[in-house]
Image 1 (tube, helix red, strand yellow):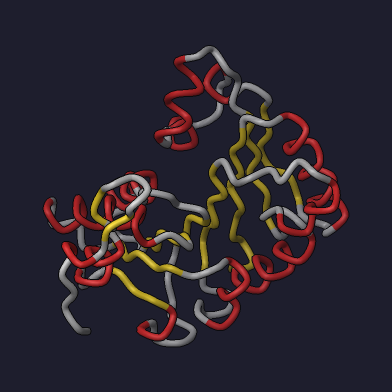
Image 2 (cartoon, rainbow, N blue to C red):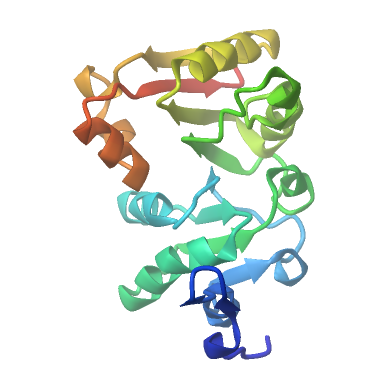
Length: 215
């Protein structure tokens, strides 16, 4: 990997240094071309943003391999730096799209897929871009172990209800469900918060959650 100078990357509009170079230089951060095809891992988070929630998962499950996935490397580098600074060795950060995963993750290797506050794409014509659309659910089913689970969190009731319909159409089994996660009796591990989630909860917003399995 060639070292890049962060000072060479500036976002003129915001007048701040572009963090893509930092992502490039961290050894636990990967572009598609740098990632060995069909790697085996245990847990992934899609749309991981800064990767801080994935980092929490890595701490919670130290014997599991975790991959934080997002298309924006300048965000992922935040979690990568903390992982390196804190010597957390069971996590990697991957900058790819969700539809590329079928060629990058070993089939039937995943224990869990976390979808945390994915873009709801509220316009009907954009429904195919939602990470709970049938196209993506088919990919997840191929990547999950037979007893693997999808963990889905959102603050959008419309998106949540639409997603439940897609789970049913794809013959996925809903194991746990709540329209108010942090006022439920569900396990504490589900209540680990993303940065967005903490903000929403502090504003009194309800977080919806579903655990869905292949069978």
